[in-house]
Length: 316
Image 1: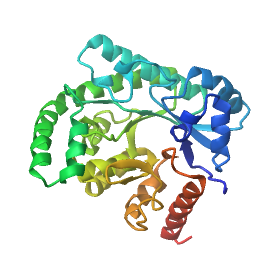
Image 2: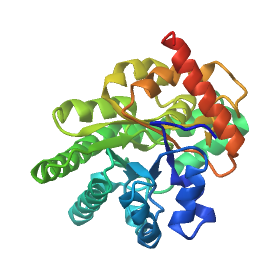
Image 3: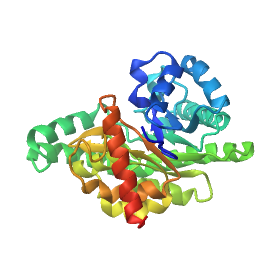
């Protein structure tokens, strides 16, 4: 396996097959990666065997994914209102948990914390129903469009309120980080459910309003592809407007509405993913976020295609 240089690799790929943290990281190192992103399922128990590896320089940590380490509490999992909670106690707890993630990031020399900042709350997972209708009837169908309009009406009406509350929470965290002297980016991530935040334009609003803070956009390529397909935003057009805000990227491709596949390799499309190479190249932190079924040879080929295409684009 070739040395992957500055590229990092998320532990989401193999965390379910390991109970010992060191074994999990060693497998990732075997793919040629010098850096890992520690995802939100990594436990304190796993960190007992990973921390010595970090201290000895056997592995670098590019980023950690909030909430880190893992806490078993559905109120603060990855699909939560989080920093936008109406309940002030829950919102404050979300702020504290993000600060806790940043403390770990600082301890491990990571450059960023990846954050799912929140969502417009619904009584049930309407996105699950939308995806089912999309797959069974198509985006243009009356069934899909009817439910989509219902979702979008509520989302659009409440987005400004939740954007503001998320922004205020991020402002609090940024102030705390400044007092501590931490040099860690807070990357607000593009999401995979239509009612979740931020869209690219919501991220732009938050970053503009918090200019000078460590809050930046974490561009999850596969998720943005998915939201474009569902009709939430025009990914390629809006990417041009938000490129300057990007700090980190999650590299993966979406097949239909299924994400975390190896770019180019699984889609068999050797051209469409080219649209994202500039964003990958510009990003300070570049992380592969792939599903467990992706095989080492597929990961290797995907990386070879991405890096060779970026190099060719620069005339190297």
